[in-house]
Structures are given as structure tokens and as C-alpha cells.
Image (cartoon, rainbow, N blue to C red):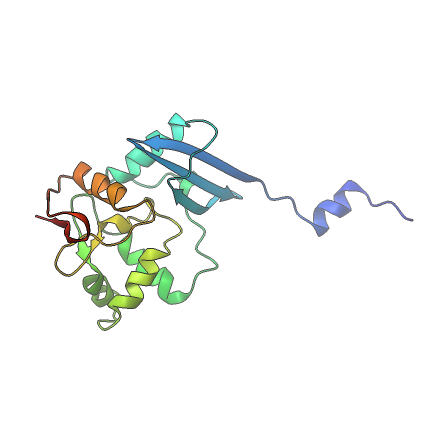
Length: 173
């Protein structure tokens, strides 16, 4: 059996560094996965082995309206064109602002696609970096969020929003 040089193995199966970092944001945990310097996913509520304060500082900056640091740029290459368009439009929602699912559908040129936009938001692999917590129902009620409605409410409250009602009837004032 012929031995392969390490370089030949490297060329055939490139090693792609995979990293996972986690931190606390207020009472909530966030985990960020990346590969080759691009974020491949954000998981809300996923506790890590240690609280990465550098990551927390970066995410706090993003949530405060700052630019996404280069090491937190997302890899949207495997997503459909519609999903990329919706996420791109959602990324433009600034802190303290919200939009509705139907408003986001109109913004991407598909005014009848509020449910499809809702599905994109429900499956947003880049929560916080692409602020899907700023998308609410037509009556300004809070709808599903990967980290739970408590986290969505916490994020919006940090941005100055107040609420009324309980449970599924909870809405922005």
C-alpha cells in the first residue's frame, strides 16, 4: 500500500477549522458556530462550556446597532435566493425599530408572502446577527423566536419597547 504525503491528504480533504463559541447575553445563552472564518449558525439557549466575554461584547455591539465584526460575517451560500433576500432586508432593521412579517414581505417585493417570510424568520440560522427578533405580527404581537418569547421580549425591551398583555397576546405598545 502506497503512503500518501500529508500534503496530498490535505489537498484531497481540506481541513476546515470549525469553532464553537458561547456566551451569556443577560439571562440568555448564545452559541455561535463558524467555519473558515464565517458564521454557519447561531443557536439561542445553547449553553457552552465557558462564557466567552469577547463574543458577548461583539454581540452586544451588533445588537446596539454597530457593524458586524468581520469574524462574525455569515455564510449564507447554502440558502435560497428568497431566503437571502428576506434575511438581507431583515438585517437592515435598526435597533429600536420593528417591522411586521407582511411589511418585510412587501420590502422584498413579495407582498403576499407574509407566511413565507415567517418561515424564513423561524428558520433564521443567524439570529442576533440578522435581527429577526425585530419582526412582529401585524397587530404588533410577539410571535415565535428560536430563543423563546422571553428572549425576544428581553431583546426588544433592551431597545426601549414596552409590552402589554400576557402569553400569546403579548404585544408591543
